[in-house]
Length: 295
Image (tube, rainbow, N blue to C red; front, top):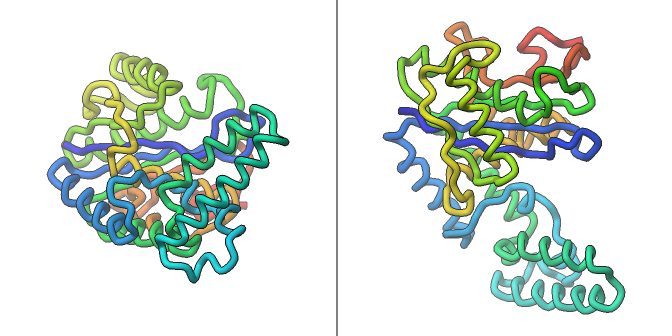
């Protein structure tokens, strides 16, 4: 059996940034997932992130609380955390006087997200992500299936949201591969309350009537929902989805170039695992070029 770990990057609201919504599945054989997950944990331990969630978007950005500490990068890791925590307290004190409830709530959410990584410099966080992507690239049994949707080109019709369109694409493309290797696959997704009911309902529909493109006899059951903080492979789907979104958003390649070789290809070498949706608008990105949709 193949395990398909699913996660998204970006938001599906059409009028909100960023410009793309990406849904991506990382597929690994059930006999290999423990080995791959173990390697991922070794990389995390190297950066003192054992048992911590890898949330790529938060790791990749700069932290104002670190930039506020003179000579932060030259400090020992334990001192970096201490000084960053002091900067957090100073900022919280200011917001407590001048900030509204929304700003205070947003700052608390930000601090909670970045706190596991305060001992790492911005460069070290990015290097950790690169090291993780390189390990995924080394796995001969790993496949990527994804849909990157340009929200300005999306219009509701058969699909009422980018999430629904992307999920059908990932399911359909995974099914073609599973059929080719005569194996079964199970979807494992982050436990997103907003998406869980929709994905379950869509999966039930696909089991009854198929997707627009194919039946899905090789997909087992409806998606299994897990806590991403406890599941390394969901975190790796997040890493790859972030890399793909940053590529289609900004032509930023530092993650995507490392993992794009895992996107599924037909026996002819044609790219079939990943789509960049721009409707009728032509696009010159390398994904669209491979699909023959370039300008």
